[in-house]
Amino acid sequence: MKKVFSPKEKAEVALAALRENQTIAQISSTYEVHPTQTSAWKKKVKENLPEIFSDKRDKENQNQEKTVDELHRIIGQRDAELVWLKKNYLRLDHHKKIKLVERDHPDFSLARQTELLGISRTSLYYKPVPTSEKELEIMNLIDKIYLKYPYFDARRIKKELKREHKVQANKKCISRLLKKMGLEAIYPKPNLARSDIQNKIYPYLLRNLTIDHPDQFWGTDITYIRLVHGFCYLTAVMDWFSRRVISWQLSNTLEIDFFLENLKRALKINIPEIFNSNQCSHFTSLQHTDMLNV
Image (tube, rainbow, N blue to C red; front, side):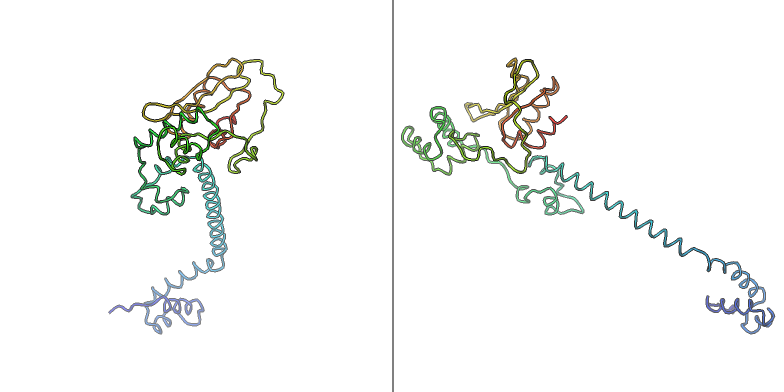
């Protein structure tokens, strides 16, 4: 039966042959190895000895360091990309963020996806409730009262509804409907210059300015239009010198998309020297101001 030698036994035979204290025949007899095999092991060890003293380990360490450096570079790049993505996600409105959620994603749960997008998980299951006929009736009455008394707040509108129209509605309901219609009582307010810290407010450039040519100054604003079955919102961009309406857009909601679409249409026609708007969140949002910072 052929004897099987372990790596350690092979090394002992090869080292004994390298010492040359005995002949190959004697070594082969001592270890019960064929002389040809002993010579082959001796040759193999002699050929591979230089590798023990080579810089192989140094090269391996250098390769490991390069690998670690590359991994750090990739991680840093990924971090920068995530910051960039997060910054751009903030510019998306709530409905667009919801559309990005993949309900059957194999790796990310709904809770993790909503956390990354900065939205509430419960908002995934929200279904908009249409405005009831009763609310539409109250909104129409509120609109009439507001046109007659634009300085009335929710409390005074409540009294007017009850006195003139025999309609019962609590203050909380009226406040909610006023907000939905984009209406607010007109009266002097403190801290008018205070702005939302989340959006950058640009300086007012029209003070002591003479407007004497087209496309020097454009202005934009929003208003609402009462319809038979509800309300719609109108936004327009106008050239102040010629009084020409550059572009306009209608929407049945106050989502920012229709503001942006209207601005895009206007900027395709020309680019003004100065663009003015009020300080509402739509006009001071990053999506809106970035389109003008060209």
